[in-house]
Image (cartoon, rainbow, N blue to C red; front, side):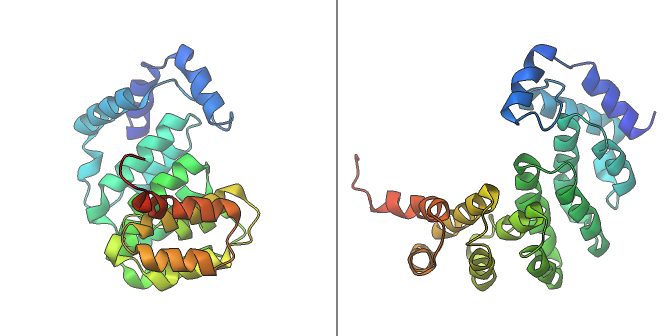
Length: 229
């Protein structure tokens, strides 16, 4: 069997119709689900990796991963993201096209929020010159590329390119899309854990939406609260 067939057989054998309905409802019925909850899915994924050793390839098996990505159920998409993130040591410069495809197909906040910091962010650290690609994403018609540009530095902490982060947030501050405004607040909240004063100044001086402002200030406000409150 192909790797796709192996994973599909494994996952479909553990499908749970009783759980799929609530999972689909939570995701606004954008995708069908098999009903495999995260802990069980991770166990099954480990079994799949033991059987196939796909993660031990010397390069990303993008062709095989794309075939799995085409399957309709969301659990398969989560697994592609997990395997791709796991294989960060073998990323090649040309893999960015594959990562961009993951962002722009089967797109929703749950997939993009896994791809942006765990795949794109790691890739840009390995190939820093390619981070300039995010300059185009930050103003792209595709909202998920915009969200990725804003969020890819979530785990960078002191290594954050502050100028780029603030610039992307400024470019998108008037964007009407909820997922963009939420991303701005999330990115700024995370960076405030590293640079609270600079982030607070930026938020107060930049005309952000109420949502972005509220989300961005959450950590800073908690730090200022008296103990026991």
